[in-house]
Image 1 (cartoon, rainbow, N blue to C red):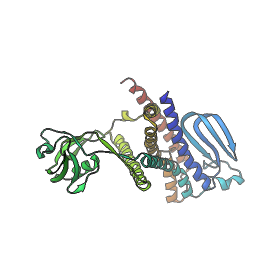
Image 2: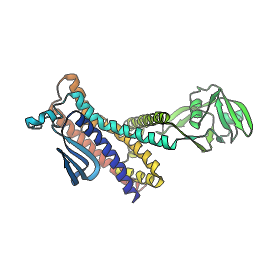
Image 3: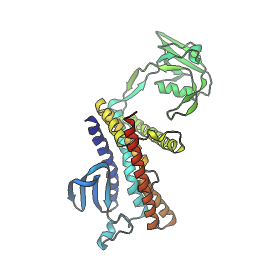
Image 4: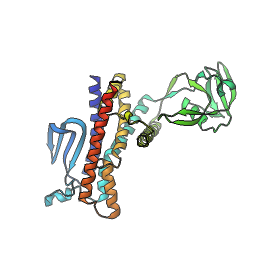
Length: 353
């Protein structure tokens, strides 16, 4: 049951915010909106306000905003031409199309801002939990329980601060100031170059000293300004990781089997529901960033594909031919259908692993 609830909440929020971006920008530029639908297929609920049919449809795997004159070859009444999407300047059409992914980015920022401002930022403390035998840390005399206060005189607030300093040391000796019992000690440590697996399973050279964390955490309260900065940073880091992940899949560095679909999202969403409201919100923000980036891929029928055509139109000063767009859209629909079949296959096969 939690899986179903989680999926409804996650997809409902993401689809609504995405389509709301298109809808609000269309309205702002005077484009008529005929339908605003959450879901595809047969309508379940419907209410017409003005000229817009607001509806809830049966298949909850997406949504759409149907605008007046959305198709270049659409027959229009003369009275509808001022409200036609196709008849708007290309820069306005690009903003309307880009608004969906942009609103997904904004949703992530707003969610992270709320989390950081209300719950603070959880930091892993720089307390050494385990020292690897024969490592630079052991040779230097670092011990389990040592708290790293500073490195080369620069205060260390978290384990990530310490890791970043070590990894960027280029092997130069660092002066660790550690708190041990009631003593403050200066311990010179020379990081060693080692080959480790990154999050994509690739070998990567990194400087290490051979220590592990105790796992102790501390929560740092953030004001609104710091919370906003942290929300921007977190959204950027997730975006960067998502883009790298997509590139790695195309390069073959990551197995396509890692790609998940609605079933995987439902399972993960259900787990977040069970773990609490904040976890569910953070998951929504994560998926929202992923949705924004995937929609910006230059694939026909996706927002990125439309932006590509409008970009070409802006350069050559005329619309791309209808025949070219139709062929591209058919290819795009075929690719999306194949992708949907593939992710559903991956989701189902996970149950047998």
